[in-house]
Amino acid sequence: MARRVLITFDVDGTLMQSTGPRSNSLHKRAFSAAFLQVFGVEGSIDVITHHGSTDPLIILNTLEYYGIPQETAAPKLPELKAKMVEYAKQHSSEVGEGLEILPGVLPLLDALSRRNDVIIGLVTGNLEEIGWLKMEALGIRQFFSVPNFGGFGSDDSNRGELVKIAACRAEQSFPGGFRLHAHVGDTPNDIQAAEYGGAVAIGVCTGIFSREVLHEASHKEKPAIILENLTNIQNFLSVCGLPEGDF
Image (cartoon, rainbow, N blue to C red):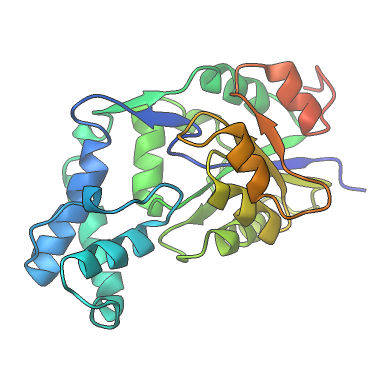
């Protein structure tokens, strides 16, 4: 019987937060660069609400705001995503500007990475290359299981599908099965995606959503587990059914 636990983390608002006047600057500029190069649109994603969304949906919704219908923009998604990644790689030294790792994240990831019964990946609306660039900039990519894996906005626009994709990739790279898949996120969309994808939903109140809002997003008979933050390692291990000190 499988004894390992698969844990996937959302990125923005869960592992890190955007701060200051250059909040998440490179990622936002990558969107703007793609809009300009593909459609000649000078614009910013700040014109729409995008918390808990995926990069493909943010692209479509922002371009629609600027007058580009989704039926026109959708066929260009591969090109738009490629332009975003190209821009991000060209300016990779700036990816950490306006980003800050959240309290408790580094010691938690360090503790999880030392265990022989835990596999760690990402599930994020970020395009894959941009998601990992953020992890590198924050100095925490080293804590994720190798080979790195996850479900990303470059794979699908539906967060629930990303949870399934991450689980499939984990099984391919680390065969033998998992007794539990827990997904950690800070938005109602993360809660619903976890449940859709067959994972235990763990919400954290480190983004813009309250405990009550995250709790209400859960549609399972056994509701999502909501934590204030990720600073209590022992509590997190307990929530995931992990014994202390199993290294």
